[in-house]
Amino acid sequence: LEFMRRAVANDPDSPLTHAALGEAQWLKYKLTGDAAWLNLSKEQARQATIRNPDLAAVHNLTGLVTAEVANAGWFTEAQGEYLRAIELDPNNSEAWRRLGEANEANNQIETALAAFKRAVQAAPADQWSRQSLGQFYFERANYAEAAREFQNMVNLAPKNPAAHYALGVTDEL
Image (cartoon, rainbow, N blue to C red):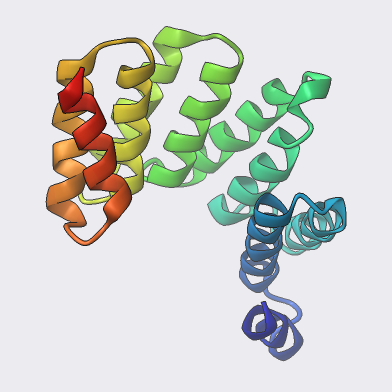
């Protein structure tokens, strides 16, 4: 976080530094559950948007913080942010993956699957897109497809224990 704070201090007019700091603060919120980090992340999303609302990274962050209040029914707003990020950068695998998560949370299963597949298509070497697609299949008891994605994940990140664990669990079923 300190590195990102310094980046913002060194380049306060850059929407990308604000977006990066906001994502780091969002991750800290996810790790701690402390709402103060989420509020800081929201402020960085606001600052990044003020500086340039036409960057995919800005919409990725805004989607992340918006989805955190999804229990209030805001997944639709998060979906809009991810769609805007995709409009700005059609090969943004993170936006596709997060759109899949928001669609899945909204019980839009077919569109979620399509978004997860598009994330993998946009970045075939991205282990996180593979993990999300594999998890989607796993949760629907499509173990053959889940195992295929988890094996791809192992191939991409052979030292990632989570990849081996996911594949191992799937192989047991």
